[in-house]
Length: 527
Ligand SMILES: O=P(O)(O)OC[C@H]1O[C@H](O)[C@H](O)[C@@H](O)[C@@H]1O
Image (cartoon, rainbow, N blue to C red; front, side, top):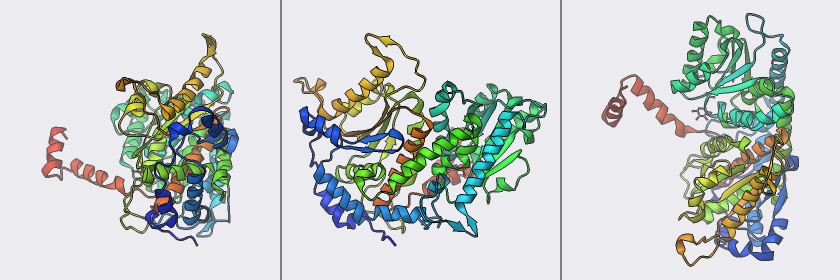
């Protein structure tokens, strides 16, 4: 059994803390040194991706210290315990099994006589059979016509991951002849969200998936009622159009109001649920079950790498360790995720939840306060768009923000044009290469307003093309990175008590049970 200790009690962490500002990234990345580092500091990921960390503040000394930290904090043992079914989610006393939805990495995990791998596979199979029947016209609307659109109703983990993955492959699927149904998403309780989607949807030919692990989320239940009302007003029977994805213990699971229900369980956290039926049903309907299976395969291949004890061969663990060095030793408060891929436009939003809801904690996994900083603020936008927006602060602002670039050699659609001797894809890639060097090396100017200090660290994940496999690997990489960081900070990355208070107060406002500031704000907003 691994032992769980606070980061600041570890001898290897104290050693690492002595390496503050050990690498001058400007100097390290300039001239031939830089070229050597780019070739040297790269770790292969699954599905042809690679994690290049040449422009991070590491050298062999820092890497050796990080390896000691990985060893002393038993990161590989903790991951092994997790995938073998230990109660890693101490706050809720739950297992953490999202990896098992992709592939079995270790022993059989059996809970109350149920083999959990078999359960996840059976739900995948159920989703696959259902999707195939919809595509074949065996499951139709009341008029016997095919469904053409699928609308996911969910919020947080029941929205962000599946939406990001759908957008990531929407154009790829069309280009590769596997686009089966258009997918849309309703998440916000803002009535304009549901209204806008419903107005642009042919209701008679639409399936709606109510996705809520708990089956109690106010926004999702409200939007479900909103959609049912619209279906009824259109003369349609909601029971012919609505599906549910939920946990077997939730109130939704007990309802007969659905054409079909698919299940997950409490051992897969919402923000890690893209690999479960939460992502599986909508993506199988949109692209076909084979494509969803390919995403899972890509993720499973990356998970396999994450089990490696050698940090230089484990890009997920290495990325996590570098992140902790940046957060705790270098004291950088935030991290930007910058995919140079329009298809990944919602990926940073998904990672915001995944990372900040997991590691935005002030107490350790035993409920005791920690004396060090934990999860950074995560934000991001696709490049090159971000360059024309917030990169000013990244280049010349007073905070140093570590950067996590993602880039692909080839576009998804392949339609391109040569303007002034280069394709648009080349221009995209040229920009990411330029940014890495600009951030690291800067540029001296007598005019301080035009001076670039440099010394701003970044890494880049490079792939051939964004495909179902590489997308799955990318998803798993970040999930695993966040998991390892949670281990290092000794926090429970798998609960989210911090979201409860606002929900309770909102209920009081709606029940007109308010006083003080809450009453004043209620009055100001005319509730
Ligand atoms: O899937 P649900 O149970 O409806 O939960 C939806 C979301 O809402 C909660 O408030 C949590 O903050 C999220 O972690 C969760 O993903």
